[in-house]
Image 1 (spheres, rainbow, N blue to C red):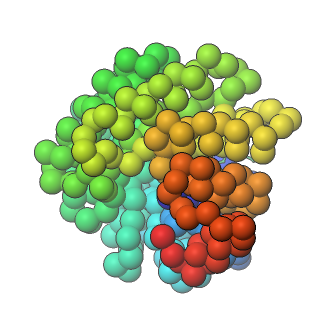
Image 2 (cartoon, helix red, strand yellow):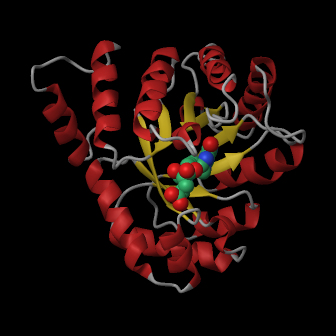
Length: 268
Ligand code: THG
């Protein structure tokens, strides 16, 4: 599993304040904590805290000064994404995200190609977020084709079927699972498939349980990446166990320790 740490996001009050005041403290602390927990990428989302590309440039540099971890630059503004990408020191990166909307495809997909970054395509379009499997698949296929046309190889393309809060849209999770299965059939090898995992537990009491149960179901369907809370030890243990059960890692009695060790060394 490719784990993308979710915590450097202006949706969290400590990060929003740190961005507004240009205080590197909490940002670098979360960068170090998530990297130590085994994150493969750090999502860096400036959210509503600022629309200024210069703030994204600052944010990416602050994260880079703290850890060598690849960065997932997260914004819905092309100019903010580009400022983040231009600030990179040569490490691997992901562009998060394009949608299937023509305007986004035309402005954001070329950025990923230009900066040699991977890209996450969320299955939205100009009509918003789909509520059914078919439009999720249609939009995913459209994004995949546009990325391939721009010269981005399948192994750098991540499709996101858009996970919804279970509390408010209970019928959507099974549709996301079905869309994941469909995405695995798009190409050989298939694109990566990713979700914003914490979306599912928004405003629920049993956050960790709901999240990890969905995650193992989604892994069985073909999910191989997630933006998630990498500080949740039970979530990571469930990932390790699911990788054993899906025969992607070799079983040993100490598989949890082996898995954690590989992660802490930056292993695959
Ligand atoms: N797909 C893609 N990118 C994404 C998302 C997605 N980026 C942002 C988001 N969705 C994923 N990241 C998060 C980060 C934190 C939380 C949810 C998703 C979260 N929020 C708390 C809540 O909703 O209850 C509130 C935060 C707080 O405690 O203040 O946990 O889907 N490609």
